Image (cartoon, rainbow, N blue to C red; front, side, top):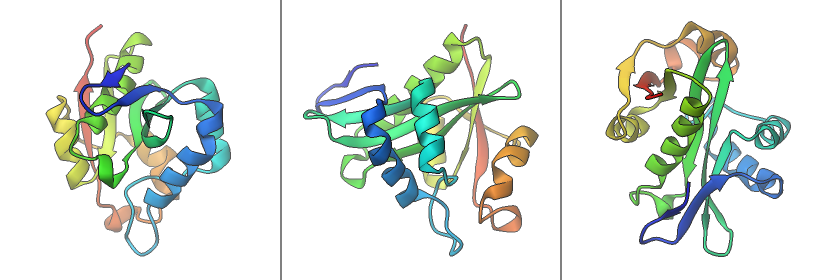
Length: 167
């Protein structure tokens, strides 16, 4: 993890002092009953727990302002990249790819053979550029997170992608 060349943004593990900023980013981009949003809703407490455990990464401008984030979560033998957000003024600069790479590097270092993500059509293009390919939605994800999404079932607008990781 390091500085994204040419734009003065550093990618690194999120810090405890960034929990509120991350929670704000996630809340602003969370799925809503009206069909808007692009992320599974997470509470501040869930984000604080993930930041403390280490799998949240942050993109910071010079001066420390948070401009993006993503997390890597593990459960039931599955590694997932989720909560990927890049502020609109910082998109199309490679930050999303760098955040995804940071998460997949963590998954690989922990021995996972693959990482997956549930993505909308816009995010799918980014994930595919870094090597992810379409795949069926994992049942573990459906049972764990999709059940609490306001867009579950027929209203779901996401598809699954997977990346085979090098060990």
